[in-house]
Length: 145
Image 1 (cartoon, rainbow, N blue to C red):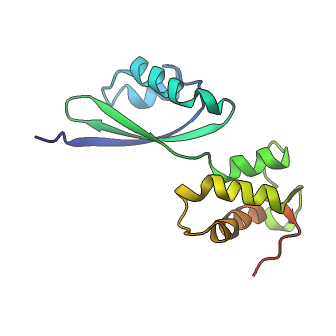
Image 2: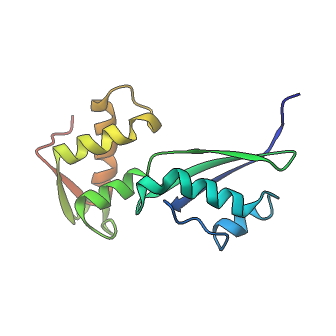
């Protein structure tokens, strides 16, 4: 008989740094899963992505077991990392706070492609470019259609 999913949890945790302390412990504790086991598994799987924020979808089953799927880092995080800024612009597309190259945009789009609603890298680039524009990040040499 298949196990029944009783709860789905979405978390964004820095790679390799999951601990039983908040926010992980406060979210997973009430779900009834072994927090230390989750932290150990998560840290082992994300050790190669140290410093990045990694979204994680956790399925909790009726017997208190769990599994999780790692996603790619959020587009905003990758854009801030490429632009070397701490946060996006307060005025969005009105204010330009940084500039990235088309090559940076393509690299981010290729990284995010599995998690986006896009079939090609060019479509993914359009989605990421929209996020960049709303953050106040200009893409040097990229023309929007």
